[in-house]
Structure formats: C-alpha cells, structure tokens
Length: 196
Image 1 (cartoon, rainbow, N blue to C red):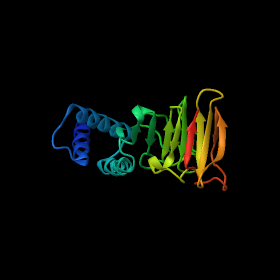
Image 2: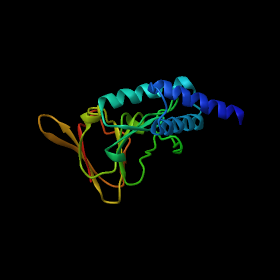
Image 3: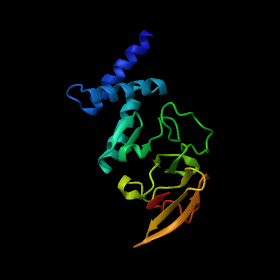
Image 4: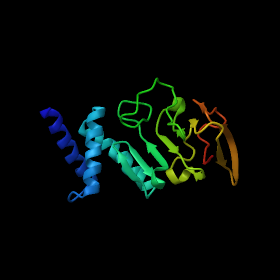
C-alpha cells in the first residue's frame, strides 16, 4: 500500500511538472489526481506519462480549445469529440479502464462514430457523438484514416469525405458498421465526416 501511495504522489508531482504548473488549483489538482490514478492503473512509469503528455500537448496546440480528460485523452466540444492515444506498448487506442480487446477488433463506444489512424483499428482514435459535419484538418487528422467504426444507434448514417476542391464522398455507413481497412483507394484520404 505504501508503494502505491508513493507512486501516486510521485506521478502527481511529475504530472504537475509536465504541465508546468506553478501551484495547485482545484482543476489542476483534480486532473493531476486523475492522471496519477490512471497511470498507476495502467502500470505506466514517469517516462511513459511524460511521453503521452508530449503527444497530448502537441495535439492541443494543433486543435486549441481542448481539455485533457485523462492520461491519454483530450476532449473538445463539451466532450462530444474525443481523441484517445494508444497507451505505451499498445497498438490500439483505449481509455484507461476500457477493456483490452482482441487485436483487430473495433472498440468504439455505443452511440459514437470512430476513425482510426491505422488499419485494424490501431493508432489514435478520434470519436464523435454529435450530429454535424467535421473538417478533420481541425484535429490534424485529415488524410490519416485507415479504419472506422460507426457504433451509433441502429440505422444512423455517417458519411466520410475527401476534399479535392469540393467535398467528395468516400463512403457512407449505416450503424452498426465497421471496416478494419478502408481499402487502398480510400486509405489516408478522409478529410471530413458528417456524423448522423
């Protein structure tokens, strides 16, 4: 028990150092505590936490207005868009506490649509729950999709587009549906998505 407490305090302190916080505030203390708890739960060391933080900081610089919600997750639009980074040593992105699925298995939560950076649902996972059009360049995710999972309510349609001077539909899916590889003609061409 003493080792866990020491690890949690150490990780919390290192998270504060990574954030560059001068002093604790209730919001930063809460996030630090969440990060420390998740890091312990996932078995991450300080170096791995710092590496994840660098990825998150880079993503938040690309897409301002985000809020870090965990050791490997950022949300935007009041939690209606979430990017999850793979944990160290894993190929597939998942939140800490989310079950580890079989490799090559989609893991998009019910009522969400997910795009994955690599085939077989690997790499970063970008998810949405709101019904609107999204330009993927907003997240630096344009031309980076290789697999997808539409896990919205049955029959809800997601459309994915390529920008070629105008929006051209690459594919449409009616939930529930998924593809572990978009095919060579569509790989890394997605520039926009209309959820619902």
